[in-house]
Image 1 (cartoon, rainbow, N blue to C red):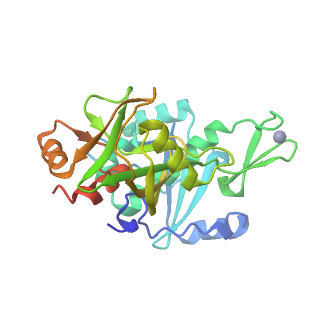
Image 2 (cartoon, rainbow, N blue to C red; image 1 turned 135 degrees about the vertical axis):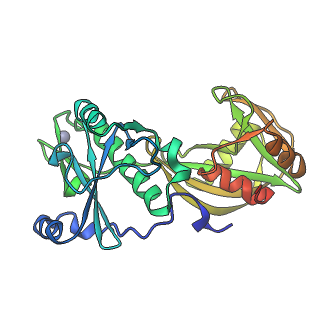
Length: 294
Ligand SMILES: [Zn+2]
């Protein structure tokens, strides 16, 4: 498996970061190029009945202050528009659609649409969580076409990303998967956890695996990364080999165990073991180990 096989990472979208502060240029471009405005409410997109593409329109939606320039895709400009609850309800009523989670539609979207949905979701959630300055508590205003927040005292804030590590650990023909108490029945996935302050991502992998399973690892190799705005993570994926196989659980995990490759394939096909959704990098890691289930 290649990094480019990870969902949400394949796109032709050019973010055009240098244009975010060029207000006049963007204004001009809006006149000459087709524009797409994507309404987003609480990170969710609008879907019309029977349609599997999220709704977008060629006219701005909601307040222009809540508009974020996403970039240019195939010569067309894309914007996300954060809606208030009232604006979202009004739009649902006007279109007959409803705001739904990306989780539900991820597999139906093509590469570019999936990326735009993920990107606009991340920006929308960040805007909602940064209404006030985290330093002085005064009200923030969006700047740089939605990519920066600035408060009354001039403190600048940029989209908040939380790095997390996720790792497929193998030992010969078996791999290590676990489940948390809160997960739906029979769901198993790769071990994962957040990188802590002052910690390298490699150290985070070693620590998380040891905490959750008591396993020490070797031959850590980078697999790829996946933006994961649920609400603001960046998943950094690795593969590693186990140096031991004696599992001991911590309180966070309900179960961690070794799965023989052939057993895992059989149980997944039978539905007795359920993996994380196909669009997750956890699924990419497991698929890479067991081969495509078809
Ligand atoms: Zn401030």
